[in-house]
Image 1 (tube, rainbow, N blue to C red):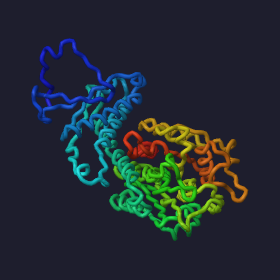
Image 2: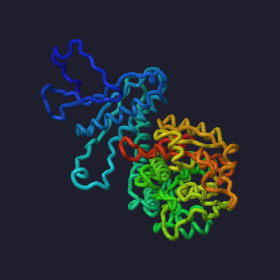
Image 3: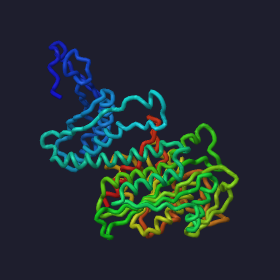
Length: 479
C-alpha cells in the first residue's frame, strides 16, 4: 500500500499524539472511504527505559507489537500484512534476529483460535484470511537472512506452542492417555525422517516394575500409556549429544481420595495438569520442522489420570518405584511426582547427557512465584545457567529456587518406607517436591526440574499459554 495522502491542513497543525507500546491504529488511504481495502495498518509504539538495555530489552515491546498487529489484521480481514520493524540502532545482527523471531512468533500465535469445542455463530465466524506477512528492516538493519531465518524459526516454534495450547485446552473427556499417545504416534508417522515413537501399555509398564506410576494410574478407567518419542537429525552419525525431556502427563487430576475440594481447588481446570506433557510434545513438533543437527532428544511422558474408585490408591499405601525405592503415599493429590519418579528412571535408562523435567507440579510454586513465573530447581550450575539463558532469550520467565537438600531432605523421610510423597511440614512444598524427584536421578546425570503450575494457564485470556515450549526448544537447539 502507498502512503496515505496528506490530511487536511487544519487537522495537522500543531497536533501530536502518543499511544502506549504495541497499540495499533488503522489509517484510511483515501479520505471518506469506508472500504477496509483502503486502509493500511500502522503499528505505533513509544520508547521505554527497557530499550536502553539493548536488543533483549525490546522483547516485550516487539512481542506486544506482534500481538496487536495480529488483532488488527483479524479486525481488518487483511490478506497481506507488511511491517517495518524499527529495530534499535547499534545492536548486533543476532539481537536483531531475536527481535524478528519474537515479533513473528507472537504475531502468528495471536492469529490462532481454538474453536474445536464451539458450535453456532462463534464457531462459524469468518477467520482472518491472511496469506502473507512481510517484515522489513530499516537500512543497515541486517541482511535478508536476518529476517528469513528467524521468521522461519518463529513459524516452527509458534506451531509447537499452539500444539501445546490445544493439547491443554482439550477437555479430559477428549484428551486422555490414549489420545495423547495417538498424537505422539501421528507426529512420528508424519515425520519418519527424524522421529520415531514407542508406546508402552499397562502390561509393559508393570513389567518394568513402575509401581509409583501404576499406583496413580490404577484408579482410572483409562489405562496408562508410557510415551517415548525420539528425535534424531536427518544426518545422524551416532555422535550426537543425547538429552531427555520428561513431561508430566496427568490428563485429569481429581486429587484422588485427597480430593480437590472447595472454590480454590481449580478442579475444573485440571485438564491443564498435563501441561508438562503438552510442552514436550510441542517441543517435539517444533523440532520436526527445525531439524537441529548434533542433538538426539528423548521425549518421555508417563500419561495417566488420577481418579477415585475402588481400585484407586489410598493414603497410607506404599508403592515401589522402578529404581527399587519405596514411597509412602501421605497425600494422593501429590501424584505427579509419583509418575515422574518412574519416568525419570526410564529417561535415565536411555543414557542421556542431561535431563529436564517439566511439570505442573505444585501449588506451592504458584504461591511462591505467582502466575507469571515458573520455578527452576537443579543442583547443577551449568544447567541452571543454560536454562535461564534460554528462557530469557525467548521471553519466558523462570526463577531459580534452591534445592536446599541439606535443610529439607529430612522432611521427606518416612518411618514405613524410603520416602514419603509429601513433606512433614506445610512449607517449602515446591522445593521438597524437587528433592523427592532428585531421588530418582543419578547425581552423575545433570538434571533440572521446571515447575510451571502458575504460568501454564493465562488467567487474562482464560486459556492455555503453551508455556515452556520456547525455553525447551531454545535449550535443545543450543546443544
